[in-house]
Length: 305
Ligand SMILES: [Zn+2]
Ligand SMILES: [Zn+2]
Image (cartoon, rainbow, N blue to C red; front, side, top):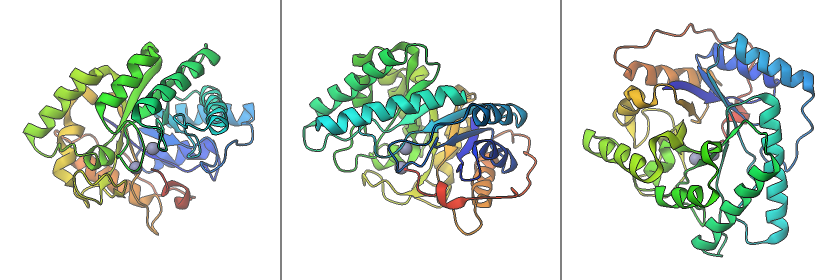
């Protein structure tokens, strides 16, 4: 697995790439703007070029944008849905401008309209997005939900339903968040349960559909449906729960992004989580040179869901 983390962009897009590399990331996920805003200021072409150059210079092997939190592609309220679809299209354009591989997004919440209607609305939203951005190179990656509230796609079956209905080929994929998986009731802490998980991924989604992971331990119990991230090895999944995943050759070229809590040490906390994961890899992967990033903005990263 290409190990990485969600890095804040308060110090600029290009700095996020440098910070990522400095703490040992092979891959980074960013927000393209404040995640609590509908629209961000346009990205100047020079800033985009600087970001691309920094990604190359730092040798990062995968990049992704995580969309903003206001977007709900399943909303039953027409004005909100229209606004969400516009904002999503803007995220796609920003992702293409920055040249990132994936746009990771929460499929949506049905807000009482029911799962069936919600899943149909998500599929329609994605079909429209593909149509309106025909030349886009970015993969649209649905993130599995923890199953909190009316959020959709906490199961492989729901993800598969949307993907089948969109019929977007390789432009559509999935990001699996380990905390959300665990919260949704999927155990993968033993050889047997991990094997069953991989089997279900292959059967229901198709293994190639999973293009990224979010590597988060879980504060809450198996099947709690609570979306509470914990540092690697400190939660209910535990170190052993990650060992099989990071050693699985099937995901060797797949990025895995940390979205774990950050404390007063800032991104040094991420560096520790990355080390915990690398120590699980057998044979050990070569240590990444570690240097403390010159500047950090931990607060931005700690809010990722
Ligand atoms: Zn989460
Ligand atoms: Zn997310």
